Image (cartoon, rainbow, N blue to C red; front, side, top):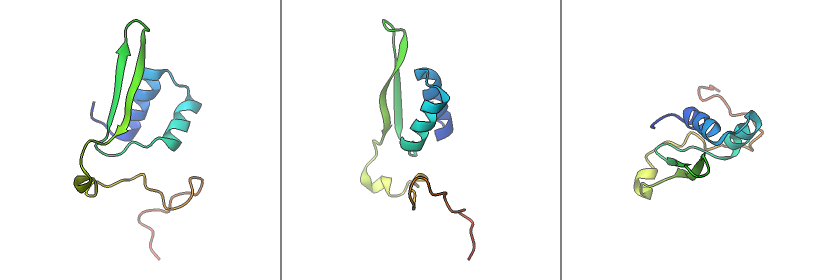
Length: 88
């Protein structure tokens, strides 16, 4: 699946059976970078999905600098992000 971070987080919630509080905690602390790989496998004997890899980057540092990281925060996590179109 190729999708935006919200869809990837929703898939993680459904596949791993997380409740709302758990997925919000994941969303607050586990980023989903552009072009990163998130890998789930189904364990038949257990009858459950398992998270194998999360936010794994497989491209080199030279390419990484050209991909925008929308999750870079300027302030502490509890500080709201300033609007991107803010004018002085």
